[in-house]
Amino acid sequence: MMEASSNSSVHDVEHQSKWLSILVPAHNAEPYLAKCLGSIFANIRELPENAAASIELIVLDDASKDGSRKIIEDFRSRFSETVSVIEHDVSSGVSAARNSLISQAKGDYIWFIDADDLIAPGIMVDLLDIVSRVKPDYIMCDYATFSNEPTGLSKRAHKATFTGPSNVLIDDRSTALSGLFETGALHPWSKIHRRSLYGDTLTFPIGRIYEDLLVMPLLASRAESFFHVAETWILHRKHRGSLIGSKAVKNTEDKCFALVTLADEFEKEGDSLSRRFQSSFYYFMGRHLRVLFKQLVRSADVETAKQAYRTCSKMLSSTTIRIDDRVRNSLIRRGRLGKLAGLLLWRSRAQKRFE
Image (cartoon, rainbow, N blue to C red; front, top):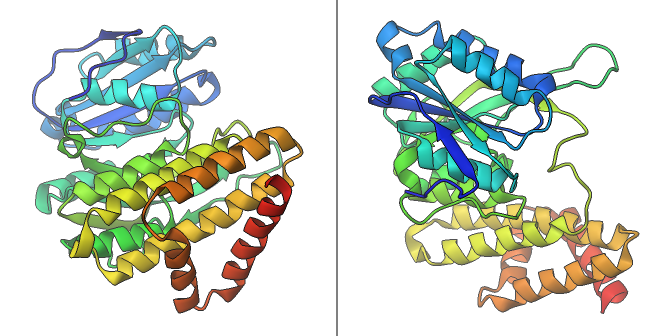
């Protein structure tokens, strides 16, 4: 497995055999962290004693400058048999944080929880049942969003992470991957997966965002069995501080890198993945490319947008895969002519503006 980042130190509890590693990266998360960790332990307390004792919670203090470390230490002192702490002296971003957490995890399964999110009440018992009874490699759960903006009561809306059969074991990778790309819900906190899927080669790309868009499908492509829970297990906080919500045009390069890398990886699978999967993936890719070109065209930072456009164009043309044709065919076969027209329009505008 991967080694922890060189700028980190580890304070571990004694590890026994663990069925679940809950991994929480925390960077300046003081306003939310206590509630997040509290929701985790509220769930753990509902488990049988032996199952609760076989969970580890590893929290990474990613060079926080606020009171996050004090909150972490409080939970470690109260739950010393469960909580381990990693600290980074210098923050290198969420990918580096996740890689360090994975390197310390001992559980058969891994579940990343964002420090500003909550686990819904009572769901850990259901997770234990699924893991004990069905033993899937890759579990997908649904979620609900809520806001911390002072605009009145929070509104929660259930969001599905998978299109396909629910509450049954799925042993067909094409079905599982197609269902993931249909929703496009590729965040790690709505997935619980076997630690062994990372092997010695798969890591989160340090220095890039949209890392989830790349890594979560690659993990799924290594799995042999899947299970979707059509219930809200995660309460996901939407707020202005969200990194993925940033409109920085430079981020388009990271999105394009993830899309092209996935296309190259799936091309290696050949005929093992179905036409349905190809349709789902290239439909997903077309939706993202339309947004990407639209964002570049509308950017007020022309020079940065021009550089990003050139970088993205080079990546898209560097592969031997006929991406344009496959995206176009997928949209046509689905009858999404409006989305195809939008993609062609914004790409044409980008070409006129930057070439």
